[in-house]
Image 1 (cartoon, rainbow, N blue to C red):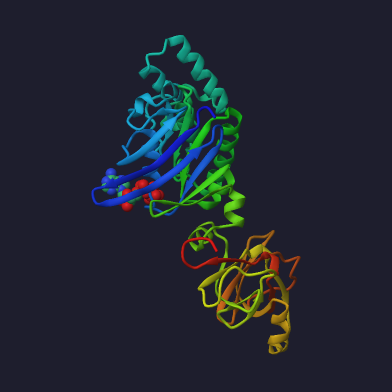
Image 2 (tube, helix red, strand yellow):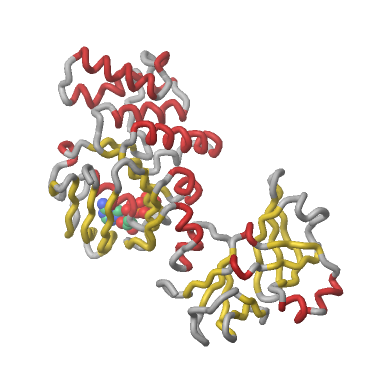
Length: 366
Ligand code: ATP
């Protein structure tokens, strides 16, 4: 495939610290790929090596079959937007966008034509002559993207470009950037530590942990089928419950509750595992506290008794924390589904077998 960026066994050391470890990755043409991971996991360093701003200690980067590893940043033909945006505040919008074209000594007429096109693209044609210092955060963001696109790069690299924006604007810009990227079909790599941002924008999420790739997949794959506890936790899966295998197809939770997982279990007896269940998959119903005395009967149906200790109500939906013996469950529900739910309510939480997934507590897949 043309324009595919290939990263082969790339490593980066800063002194004695091994920051990026044996990364192998291909970035498909026309897609938006997010590097997702906690602070310090090496995602910016990996992006900077792709940009040519850092040199890998070992390994190879190539695009279109051409070795890029030691090609200087200015010859890579990539557009980049940093967290700081790095715009010139006293220059006008048009001058900022034209800046890379001036560096390339493009003709005045072609500069003007390209700037006009980009101003249309970012829907700011009326702001061409305004100094950047007089723009809002979202408008600056769009100008930074237009500048990165000015010289028609093969690849757009975005390093936490939205982190300075407030939550509402940030969500609006996520959609705007995604739509723009899809319209242009430009291959884009974006660094973020925000899983919601990655889920909203990416075709492919690369989850990084301590310099290594923990998982590569579509947002849905990573959410539905995390390979280990780190990924499940980082992607915000909600309920990661310590468990031990029991019988043929059951696990025992921390309070002794036996949960049927609906099929043959791959984990072997004695193994330290986690039961994953998404908050939206747990069914809640209000119960009489006396019913909890009949513990064994209810647990046979994967029903776990508990008490609501916290409710986060966001209007259309709500998230309840249910304290069960030995662990707490997060449950996503709505006032319509469970009328009368309140802090202190006694409840039965059902964990449908098909929604239960097991992972090993240590890295690796069961
Ligand atoms: P963040 O989200 O906080 O930016 P990150 O995942 O992007 O984190 P990097 O910025 O790639 O992480 O940093 C990875 C590790 O490498 C960190 O421990 C950082 O301190 C270290 N590091 C980064 N750049 C350098 C440098 N130029 N010299 C020495 N150490 C560095």
